[in-house]
Image (cartoon, rainbow, N blue to C red; front, top):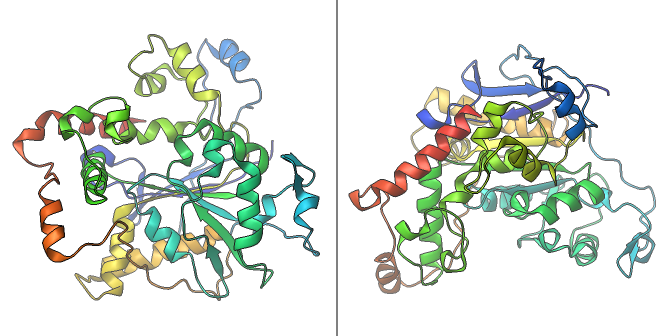
Length: 379
């Protein structure tokens, strides 16, 4: 299988999130197409469970600050086919992959709205401004219809994208990306689990949703949690399903254990049912603090030489990931704050229902979320 390098850029801040290898002021990991296989005695069993993974090596690349590898841009058809030639009555006759260059697929409250708005750059890229989560519900034909009708077709070199922060957590979405959009580049944002939960919970409150007490959101997401629970802070579980590791190390699998899984075989099966195993899917992983560096720089707030340099490097890495040539310089990052806006008096009333996760009331909640972050760090 040909080797394909992937740069996954991340700056997980804090003790629990020091995940990648520090390289000249930023955190970076360069992965080959597939990870290194183990030499343990259980290799034969592992090969049977994951038969289409070949032995591969993880290569560490000495990376010059400011340099990056330009990833190829997806080729577009010379003549735009009619929609009915692509899909009719839920049957696909041609691949729709050329309609979608990139997708912001995770995680909620991790800068996905900011990234979606940001990647509307005149004559460079366009993204649909509403969440497009059709693939999470197996609505592939309506999804392709929106891509075909709502994203501009000119100029031909324009990059087109969407945002759905729940896609990375959805079996249906992963399967649909694998079968219909295998060459689409995926952009994933992460955040410290404690800060993530506070932001997510308060976002629900701000949107006038009646929430149960935050301490009752520990564990799995049930109906009463409105999809806001600590289990969704296990970012490494969803990231593992991208197939960038072999999932044959018992220690790794223990870090991915769910509440009802008693052995490593059950863990492996639950993760490998829907993954990109053996695929060439390209992934750009960022931490929300990287966006903050750029936002502060562009707003002339809290500027240091290092933060300005890191902001510029982030934009360069993103430019290379998207396959844009050096003459295109991405603009400074914006800040998008989603949610309903109210009058000052109304906002003050709603804010009473929000939480400060640093309060003593939430010691147990913080403990659970910090444990998720620690396991993600080890993973």
